[in-house]
Length: 158
Image 1: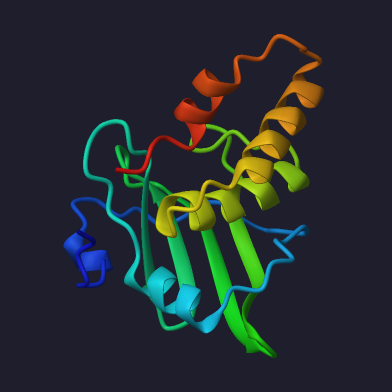
Image 2: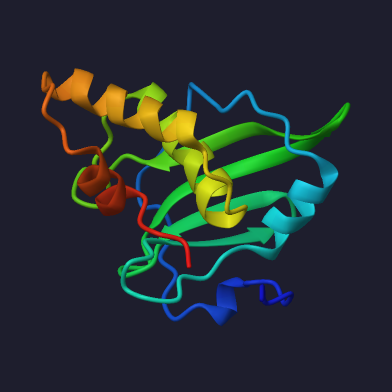
């Protein structure tokens, strides 16, 4: 059963702001339905150590923080469009001691994965494959263990 009370900044143990915000130049192109936006608005709180993300919404801004450290990684401003909601602007943590960024496309996919796979509980199979491919390409590796990589970055959803 999903808890219907929204996750808020004050309901989380630790919430640290993004220290070195960098505008995201590549944003997810997806349009989320009104129902999906309502669900995103409830946020997501990690329930155990295998979950990596806490997400909450203030006004029309989604905040995605790492669950263990409380560090802010993404902020995404949503706007209404025909057929639903889309991300109008976003920022990502650029301090390498707080978040390792691979590329603009990697950040785009990761943000969408947090919203799709973690908050909405969608399988997001194509997004997962795209994130693994982007990472392998950047690292110049063909032997990247997808399951381990995805668990380390995205985590599970209870």
